[in-house]
Amino acid sequence: SRVTLSWFSTPEEKLLLAVCKKFLGQLSRESFEQFLAQPLDQIQFFKVCQKHRLVLFVNHVLVKVYPSYFNETSLNAFDREAKKYTFSHLKLASLALQIHRSFKKHGIVHAFLKGPVLAEQLFPENILRYSKDLDVLIRPEDLGEADRLVKDLSLIPKNGKSLIPKLAFS
Image (tube, rainbow, N blue to C red):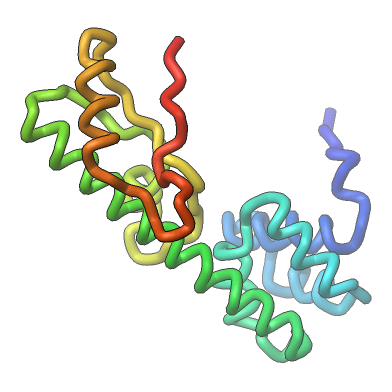
């Protein structure tokens, strides 16, 4: 029996699924181009890509490959978002490096989970998956010291909002 995902009901969602299938080699170029021939709300397509955090991926494998398919507004929107997410990803990677150096200097055993570290391992040539936070695994007995070290990094930008969210422990 075949599983059908009901949320792929709009042309925009169907195109996003087709982009993923083409990337994985599960859809021929001819079949994919049939999806491109269908009418589409480009603003809605962009929003669907944002919702699923696939703007960079779609920009890389669709928008840059088929730019004539998109109007100027959509091209600019994808380009702007791609730059924004890339810059944000680089800032997060820099933050991870600062935390790593501080923890290493003070002997705190740690491992980064997900985030820029995993993205770099999976997609070393292109940032296709982006993160909004860092997840760091540390020993329970190092929590107090880790909290102090993160606070000592003084990662408070001009707007006064800390780049380090409140630590949550379970």
